[in-house]
Image (cartoon, rainbow, N blue to C red; front, top):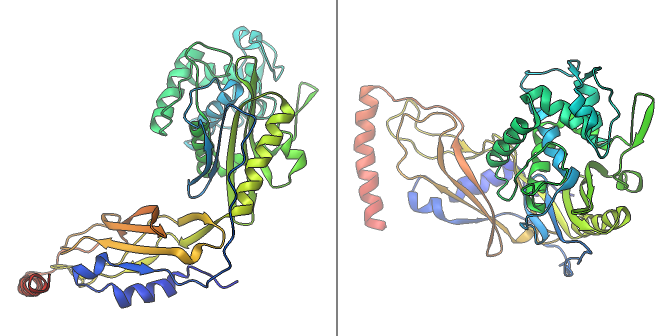
Length: 402
């Protein structure tokens, strides 16, 4: 299949239509496509659950949701944040996988699911991380909380600080395990967002979530995510259960170049959470596709810049631009560049100079900053004087025709 969003091809169109005249920079630009037969999309599946959401991991677009912002007890889905903070500390170099953690009596006595660590023993961070993710060990979670923050209460405070930083607006943690607490809650949307950060920020650790078994202290425990055995495209993330919360599952699957994240909360059994999750994933992969429009660093325009040591500024995007759209509707995509008029030096690389807006028909499906891809310093005195004159007449002519 021909590449739909070749940056070179798209840039040729843009350069032909979006010149340095400010009025032209705000015009809609059709994305060249091949017409395709229209695909009918049925209503999203209705699940036997309290809350659910389906989101694309790359674009962040929500495809299906129901009560996605309702505050519910997350049970062991809480451990996604516990694991995320361990992964963050590893990435920042504050801890290492081989660091040893002393197991306190408090961690050893923690009830619920266990990794079966022994009191007063030394356990490697690597084993504790596996124990949290695969065995859903409450003992491992408390051991990590005590190691990183000196106790579970200060660790919960750290969890909440990061929840705020990540935009989890309906989440509050009181512990590292997910054991019931009066003010311990999260939502399907927040769990999906947290999973997106886990997948995209720390891919070197994400492979752990796909492991089917973990053995520690001669005890072999299976991953409770049944979809790891049923669907080879599923590679994470976490299950949860308490009497109060019911059965929950946060799952992710990748097929071809598309990765989806699903969250179901409040189902009636282990089997129900697996089946309801499979319904969401099947619907998403069947009726939607995720397309990369531009690569990070793609040059989308070279507008005039005044008073600089160069007459042009390379403008583009500083991260990949991906959009999730219904299948066979990509011919309806259009892009619009809104570049700041009358650009003047100095401009630093990375400075925002406009907005890229992508529409599917009349719906805005994505916006991304347009940034300077290079630094343009001020030109010499003569160059600046000449540009002042040219700029005056350019603005004057623009005013006549505006």
